[in-house]
Image 1 (cartoon, rainbow, N blue to C red):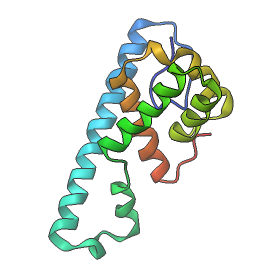
Image 2 (cartoon, rainbow, N blue to C red; image 1 turned 135 degrees about the horizontal axis):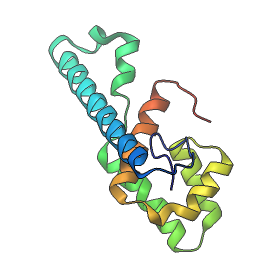
Image 3 (spheres, rainbow, N blue to C red; image 1 turned 90 degrees about the vertical axis):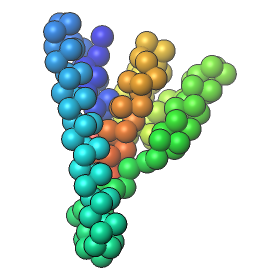
Length: 135
């Protein structure tokens, strides 16, 4: 079992209650990020892109749902085709992980739901767009 919050942090967890708590925190973080993004997009629509400034523009730099699904599909295809090195590279680049973390994740990839992978990918892209290093 892994500590699921922000996939770059793969830490063993022994407690089911800790896993549940982390998943709730992860969901709250995603909801907060979605709300912030919605507010920033509305501000941009009302006042124009120059109103946002560089700091707020970073908040709208996430990937679209289609891009997220395409990324996951490519990883799934590589794993299904037995192309583990390619899948590890895609995971490393997409989730901004170290090589060790990416290789470890290829081994456990099937144990996570697609919804969970989408949440992790969305968070990883968002964190990376803010310039926060996770490797």
